[in-house]
View 1 (cartoon, helix red, strand yellow):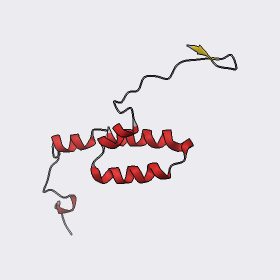
View 2 (cartoon, rainbow, N blue to C red; view 1 turned 90 degrees about the horizontal axis):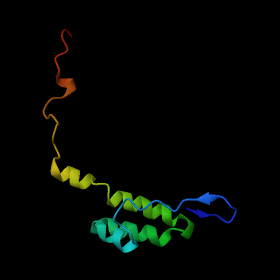
View 3 (cartoon, rainbow, N blue to C red; view 1 turned 90 degrees about the vertical axis):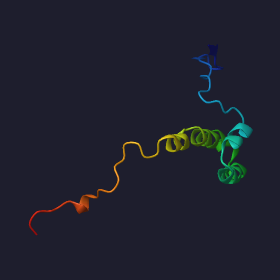
View 4 (cartoon, one colour; view 1 turned 180 degrees about the vertical axis):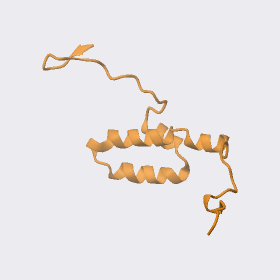
Length: 91
């Protein structure tokens, strides 16, 4: 723990919870079609907004959703039944 200029103690930032540490790491973790979007957004992002933008892309590239879909895309889903196909009794 260190002391801030105004005398209030502050803790160092917590260690990163993701393995992506550089802009290159983030970029290389993205599929090719998303790299173009990342590059375009990076070029247009103001310096003050850069940390938020990078954190959003790290989250997107490291969320595991694609791996989840590829591992068991239809587990627990029932196909063929539609609610409007149920018999309604007397009409």
